[in-house]
Image 1 (cartoon, one colour):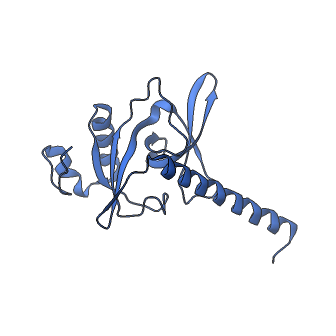
Image 2: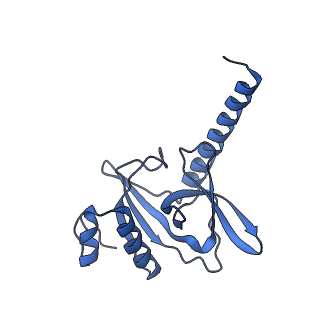
Length: 169
């Protein structure tokens, strides 16, 4: 794949995405990914810190999920009731015979979101930061991120337990 400088593209619709609202971005990104086109964008927000930081450039590849299962630890782009999210898969479930995926941001302590597997439209292929490129899909990257999110949950749970017991105040 040829890398196109940020804000430039061979496709006119992508050129327009340099400064648009998140609803417009979600619509165009979903359309392109569902058509099989890889997208590149600047991540905004802190929900995936430290894996993906505000301002990192992310490349997402189309997710062809039929017959495939999102691996725990993978970072995916999914359409949810709250818009589009870029979060880590922390588990899978079957609810009333429907395959579901459990998503969580790396910086979230306990919040997770359960979405239908077909809501996953892309998987993060590359993260660019300060001139370096990272592949989050290597087993070590997936496991490190998953471990970080689980440890954060444990620390938060331990803190809540200590507060309830009145210890450590």
